[in-house]
Structure formats: structure tokens, C-alpha cells
Image (cartoon, rainbow, N blue to C red; front, side, top):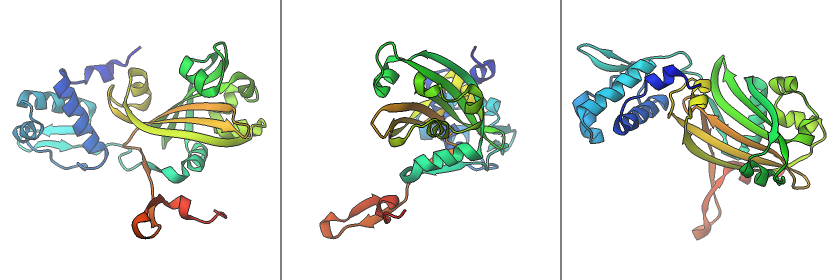
Length: 267
């Protein structure tokens, strides 16, 4: 069932919702720090090319969410919230080992666990036939008690049989698969962005429609078989992706390359 709290604080109208999301993102990434005053309604209306009524609706939604405080005589001020200083960061060049380490240093909450027939996109990715069954698990990861990621994994049923629901609640999935004899050989990852659907918004404690980092990963074993399909959603105010680059090559061939790729084989 959708969370009435998230639904009731959404601004009415597509323009107000867009302004709400843009201001929310500026605050989440630190462009507007706690205690900072937002420009006045007239200035915001001019900046975004909308009416003052639209701006007022967006600000009312941010206030209802607890992101800002509207003070008589002093305008709208960004509020400090618990967890504002808590943030994880992952380097794109070394993301796989970092995600495994993250699984060992953060808390996981298992919210769904079942065996089911794989949906068509997942079945194709894992190389299963139309009747192929998978274990589907949904977990939320928390740091200092605050949720930052929503993870949905699909694993072929024969591989998943090597660990239990209780194991999954306490141990990173890749560790469990390796413990069961799977030899991980390769992974493909895509990073994008999306908006929070109602159930995800409730689990991550954000508004419906809030911007999220989206990561999709397909893991294969040494024989090329698909052994895990992961769909991960991250709160951008508590998790970010970064990459270090080195300038390499010579002359016109000089270019940027991920720092990890320029290190020696011993790394």
C-alpha cells in the first residue's frame, strides 16, 4: 500500500513537482547547505520561468517533508536533518570490491524473499528459458540506521539453493555464492538515474518521485553463465559515484583514462 505520508506531501501540478525535485536535489547535493536561505519566491519564479503560485506549492511540499523551514520575515531556510553528514562514496573504477566491502560494513534489512519464475528481461540476462526459476530477494542497506540503498537481486534457483534466507540477511550475496562453489569471473554494470516509485520511496524514506542513482549489474561465472542480476537504487544524498582519471599517452593520442587502469598488474 502506498505511504500516505509520501503521497500527501507531493506538490500538485507537474511544474510544481519539477521545481520541488530540482530544489530537493540542490539541497541533497549540498548546493544549499543547512541554514542557507533560499531566494525569495519572486526570484525563484523568475529563475525557473514559472509563477509564484507554482514556487509556493513546491516550497510547501519541501516544508512538509522537513527539508526547509519557512520563517515569517526571513524567508525559507534549509533545515539540518539527522544523517545530513552521513554519505558513502564508490569509485567507478573499483566499484565491485567496494560494494562487497560495503556489504560487510553496513546493515542489511531483508524485506522480501521468494522463489519465482524470472521476468523476461531477467531471464534473458541470466540466459534462462521461459520457465526458469530464480530466487528474488529485496534488501535495504542502512548506514548508522539510515537507509541509503534498495537492492533487488535475482539468482538462478540451483545456485541459490546453497544458502538460506537467514544467510542472505547477514552476509553479502557474492560471498554466499563463492562459498557455495561459484567462481565469479566477470561483471557488466550500467549506471543511470531514475525516480523513486512508491514502495521504494517508503523503504528509502524519500518522496515518491525523488531522484535516485540506478545501477544494474549482471555477474557471470568463469564459464560465462549468468549467476546474479542486481538492480540497485541509491539515495544521492547518502551515496555517490566518483572516478579518478589520469592523463596518459603522448601527442595527439593523449587522453584521459581511469586511474585504476594505469596501475601495475600487481594491483
